[in-house]
Amino acid sequence: MEKQITCIGCPLGCAVTVTMNQGEITDITGHTCSRGEKYARKEVTHPTRIVTSIVKVNEGDIQMVSVKTESDIPKDKIFDCMEAIREIVVTAPVKIGDIIVPDVCGTGVNVIATKNIDKKACSY
Image (tube, rainbow, N blue to C red; front, side, top):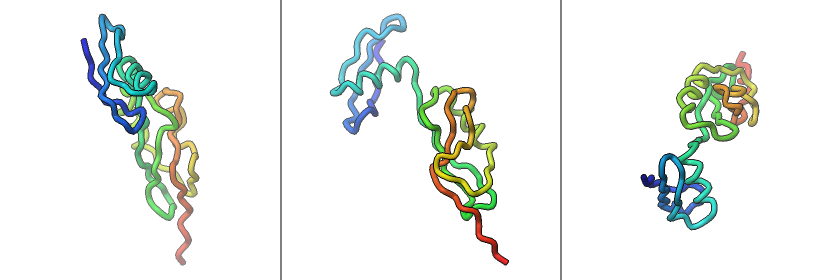
């Protein structure tokens, strides 16, 4: 069985072919750098992704903060991760790197803020 993937390990975007036999990788071709082979191997055996989203902010100078997983999580956990993020509301101030959801969905990966949000100035 052959699986065709486009490598995202570097800007070249190589068309990589992974040949498998009974669930085992037997050959990887089409990559032009070592990152391509590493990416292809991981993609067919244990695909992962970084998840990005937004979270509602109370009392902030803006109403939403961008967030992302600190590192990649298993691809099959993405929808669970998004569901967990959807339920979250934080209160300003928020700083870049603040942990918004610790250990999201038991992945061992935190969801963190990627933007600073200040507390809304009082308007009397």
